[in-house]
Length: 625
Image 1 (cartoon, rainbow, N blue to C red):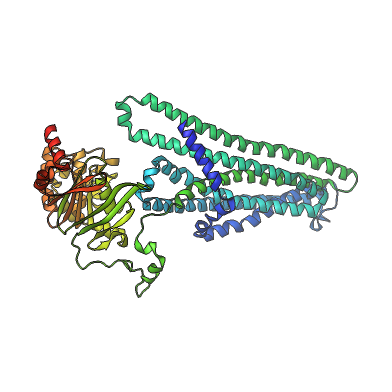
Image 2 (tube, rainbow, N blue to C red):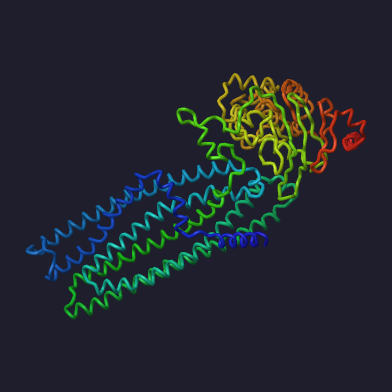
């Protein structure tokens, strides 16, 4: 029932903040403007389409009038029956051919416009999502993001392609047909108009209900995808602990809730179609009744009555199509709402020139190009690798501080180790230093510059991080070392040799060209970690961060990497997190953390003599061994 409560909460939240359709539509206009020629051409084609559809009933009516010897258009008068029918048949053929050609061309252009807009929106959304801070991903399930980037974005293309342009086409057709009917016979035209207005109101009501149901369905689909993604990623735990049946029941509950919401959308969509079918029959019956009475009273010709019967069909055909497209439009608006939730997420961590547009405007070169750094940031003459935590406080949640008043400085080239029990804040220090999160209070300086005043590319260039679990992308070994940067192959080989990884890479089937599967499942954990060392070595950072970097290595591999580390650490500032205290004896200084506070600082020998927390942890590990 947790999923139901969550879904209800989200629906309630959206109902309080929901924007009207017009404002949602305006959010898509800039994407349509990127393809103005396609948009204008599609709109221009509406005119011949609507006119061709309106002329056909009139021509059929004129044919019947010609057969019954009733008054016809001027150009048909004086013609024989055969010649007149041949002419009308030729004109009908031309209008049908024109209609088919125009519909084909417009359909192609409209679909192309929709796909181009969809691609643009997906690219902007992906760029925005990858720019968001890690804090956003901490609270957002991956499955929900995947749903928004796939099915929701696909629905957006229909807003303009199938929806907006199609609705404009149908409205234009309705207006043209209505004007033509009033010019031909106002009583029958008024009858059809009086039937049309209440039906339109009923359709709008059903569409609003469809919109609400569709939002609920998409929320349940997000939960379904989240559940699916979680089980696939954690399949090892699922099977080891025999949770297959339990997780299947959870998935089944979510799936049934999704089906229930989809059934609601189907009901309202079907209600629109059924209503229109019945009303169209009533409208034709009304035209026959009133038109027959007028024909008997010599106030209307049979040819005109026949034309109005076709007009009634043509009038409700656009309305039926309008309803179908309006359904697609409502689905698209639901997607706009959901995607807007993400696009409205503020990019918490930004470069200084983006944070201050005025300074960005000032930061122009003589040719108008943007300067490399903001006015706040002045690159030091030499990058030494000094790190200063100046009274830093940090909380993942408001006022629940995991780091409290950290105040320490690392001199250039100094090697320190962060030690402490689980939850002491060691990994949080690394995340703040790399600016994956912003400090709550205080500041962090590198070479005397606040990292918030430093472009992120410059910050990440100075810091090399090796985590315990090295993530690999699907691709070859070379690309997993270079990570998209244009290093020559010789430099990649050199980095591999510097970190003692070259021999292991050459043992792979195709060496550096060996294709790695997603997350590197076709190589061992130790090999993945070795590639992470090569990634850092090729970038030659001034600061090296090791977060349990050798934890997953066997003894033989660890000796290789330790030799490489000795070379990497030369003339670099280093921060090492290690739970095995025996591996950090040779660092220059050890910082001991407890509950986010710095409680001890000193060398290995000094801390053992002090007999504090570090000495206790060290003795416990000796006892375990």
